[in-house]
Image (tube, rainbow, N blue to C red; front, side, top):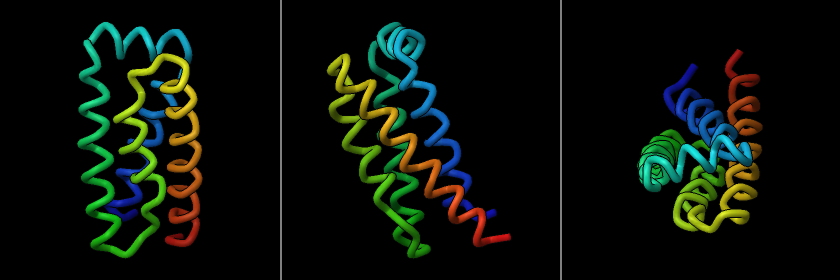
Length: 99
């Protein structure tokens, strides 16, 4: 499994976790939006690796956008869920072709 694929699984899983309405929002607010900054950096690193290895970049770009606007309560939750779907589907497709 490639580094890009592992990063997509991890970032997609974290996005799905932060998309859970009460739990994700509570964790993000209790850490004063620090998880959004962490996710921004994680998506940026994933994007750089995707560019280097010529893999799909749309999930990481969407993740960067999500990290920038996720401080808006309902919009953030929806964006986390959409980003998780994109990243996890993309990671699954790449995993399927690697086998």
